[in-house]
Image (tube, rainbow, N blue to C red):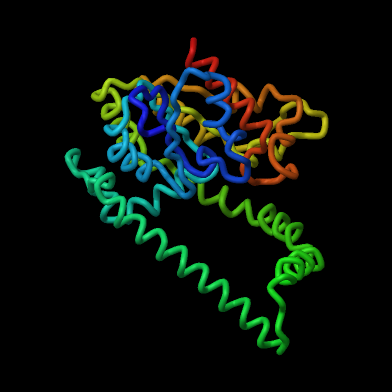
Length: 292
């Protein structure tokens, strides 16, 4: 994708854009490739990204493409809390304070690979040590051929996945409470800088609003859309984007609110990433709106 001279779309966002929990053909970028077969689509979304990481990523990698359209995805569930963390990072702040700052990451790929592999090895080593400590407690050797089966059985016996879903569901309120803070004014500055940077390079800039699970979990059983979700942040974000004259694709309005059962677009009807159907519907709306 990177080597092609013609790049049509550059996608920026967090794990929702990265495509967490679905196979590549079912991600937003995978669906867009099927819907717009003539387009070359580069996806630089990554898990954990917030607005400032995304702006830094845009600065580093957009100039390496000929992308005509930049799709900036806003994740309602955690972008604002991610921004709080990012504003405490001295390197990321340099992108915000100095329009000429650049780490030349393209030329440092070997260095990046070393850091990435070192991190992977560290995590793998930690996992092995934890597993070995369990073996020492039971004081017997587990043959390699049986390790996976035993792990699957242990997880099933403990109902690990069910308990995890319950834990995430009941701990979700605390995250919503954190997110209900007033919106940091740096958010508007970041979005303004991102738009200006894209347009200076000849790209159109689009803002795509991705809604969260909690917005729909309060629907009553009659399906009359009596949503009790606090819309303060939603309205404020939309107003900021309108003030900056950025075209908006509102997935809340275009997909979820019009769906007869919006909770069915989340796995197990619980607060996680979108499922395959949701990503497909989101991609169809984006394709239609962009082409219009």
